[in-house]
Image (cartoon, rainbow, N blue to C red; front, side, top):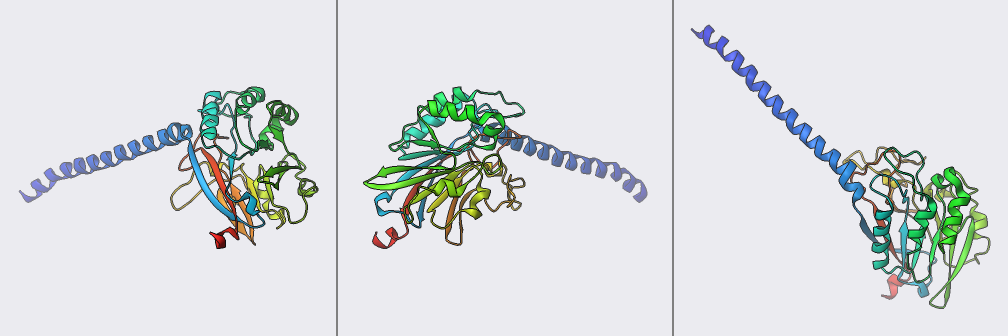
Length: 301
């Protein structure tokens, strides 16, 4: 009888194990589906404002509290990121009332799966609606150069957006001069930092902006702050592992956010569009609003 009872229980145990495994598989599949929906549909359609206050060296007290907005890697035409989204970004940006807007390159897409190419003239017509007290300035990215650097530059110029390619511009802010230095893309431009800083007087506050942050180790200490894009923040940031893929020779070192090395300051924006794959996970599209203060302002407040 005991043997018969044991034999009868075996099918029941197997059935119980199969039900348990089926439950585990069902839960795993449901979680995977939810993560896929989030990463490929919901998060790429989000837009967050990242407010960051920085104290930087060599900054003038006259420019204390200057609000500088960063827009990086728009990739207009990438999935979920057409002209309608760009209009929403511009409206959200204008509501922030920035003093200066810096566009950090990659306005077009090249060979994007699931994307639809948008001419730079159409994107520039929307970007023309940006309102900033001291103007909007731009550099080009690698995708712009791969498409047609001259055409993208012309489109931005016609929209009243000044492209700084290894050159500088002087702004009169509160009666004191602030210098903007634009450096061309590391992969596709001359990226001549010396030329960009040639007209900037020694000791003057200077904000350098470029597309690819890998140029940062070459930036001299006289630059108050360097800002860049290009990395997309890796587009995916996993718990513990971090960002598996970052288009940088330095890995995750310059992936996103504020970096200080040897007293020099860098800020990298994760941008708004997508490249290669239309995925974002824990790296939402962002407008960055920097509020900049001099280091010595901390001692007077």
